[in-house]
Structure formats: C-alpha cells, structure tokens
Amino acid sequence: MVQAKVKCPECKEMIEIDINDVEENDPFDCPECFEQLIVKIKGGKVKLITEKQKYFDESLSEFDEEDD
Image 1 (tube, rainbow, N blue to C red):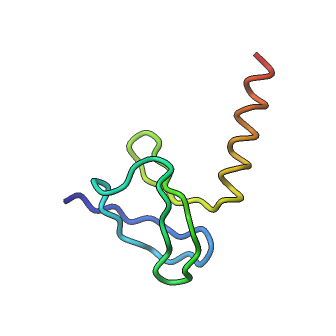
Image 2 (cartoon, rainbow, N blue to C red):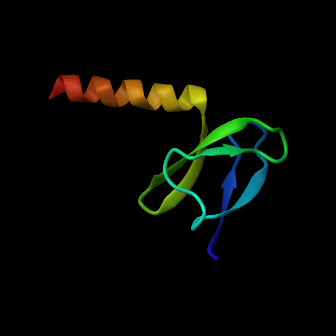
C-alpha cells in the first residue's frame, strides 16, 4: 500500500490516496467537501482535478495539436 497526499482543488483539504487503488481519470469524491473529482497521474505524481479543469486541459491539448 503506497499512500500519496494530494490537495482537493475545491476545499484545499489534504487527502491521503492509495495510489495502487486509483488509475488515470478515475472518479474520486473528496471526503471533506464531497466534490466529485478526477484522478490525474503525470510523471508518477497523483493530482485531483475538477470536471471543469478536465475539460479545460482537454481543450488546451486539442489547441496544441492544431498548431503542429
């Protein structure tokens, strides 16, 4: 069991997540504010983002692809 501490982007609460139990784009509910979040994993680091941030990140990646 490998624990990671991540911050909820809504309430800023530090949450411990077992990184062996989560995968990229898994839904995750903050136990403090009950916001539905999404797990992002980049470079071995775990991060929680909101639905709004997910769509913003996706639109930015589409924009970058158009420039190529």
